[in-house]
Image (cartoon, rainbow, N blue to C red; front, side):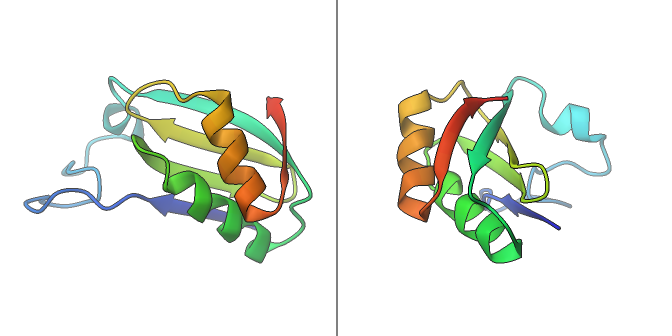
Length: 101
């Protein structure tokens, strides 16, 4: 199971939460940063949702995809995030950030 959360975009978006009209996923992430983290303790969809929700609250985050089966969390953001910010969000969700995958 996976949970993906898109952060709401400004009004006026024509087709998607990224404002793209059928452009590829790579185009949606142009100019941004994608980082994969390893999170310990996720076992189900509820876990994925909790982690995704907390990380989505970090300023600049545009999407989060958590995968309990692998323990991986893929985060797309406008700029690089600090490990401390991600660790605090994961801790708030009740899980442990192992580090970058």
